[in-house]
Image 1: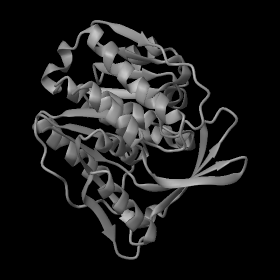
Image 2: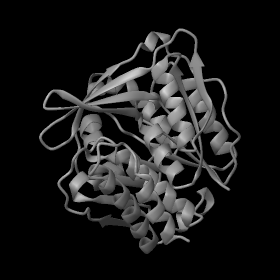
Image 3: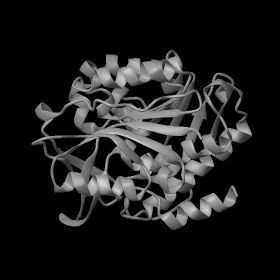
Image 4: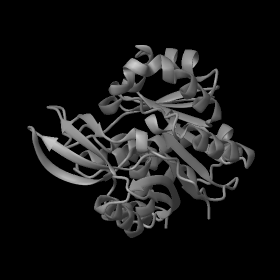
Length: 310
């Protein structure tokens, strides 16, 4: 069975609304996607680190409960798990404050074997962080060598705008490794002050990666390939929280790719109607999570999705 190998940060999210904490749960961009994929009964493996503390144990237990292989999650003596405070605005979008001792961050040591049937998922600041950069690129080199599909979520937050020129070389290198680059409207405003998706694809993505997924929140999502582009609309909702929406969108894309047996060597053959169905699957997952305070799809929602493929 193909597996999804994710590498990324692990945090404990504390959600605030009207300046009051209302919920707390394990999180992290790749982490959230893998939890959803685990609930969708996909084989997963996570490469990360957690603190040698109670919160770290909570996170490891949560991974196990959701059938995400945590054999590659390191715990270093004397370290503390990172915290993320997410403050919801009137539109239920989050502004983040992170509490992490980056000087104490170490690269996890172990990585799982990779095959041509696998998908490697990475992104966010973790994929740009010099402390763990070597391990990230080593994993990506292995993925490329073994002809595994590589999915890169840019996920460039506003808090890193002041460092964008410093981080751009690593970000561009990530795109070159990737078979699919996914980014949001906000990502490219932060990076390039650009909102036109055609310009973004032609100028900033296509020179490095031929397949690009562009998300526009309530306005839906687009996919660009060398031969065509298409748009799929979102479902109108009144969201409760958008914190896990992008991560769950990624899970929906990857789940759909796996269900259709699309691998690196067949990605270029995907037809427009197939991409339309893939995007719709991802939008369904993201919409569901926007109606929750959770960062991942519920088990009940996952089971209903699985029933459609049985």
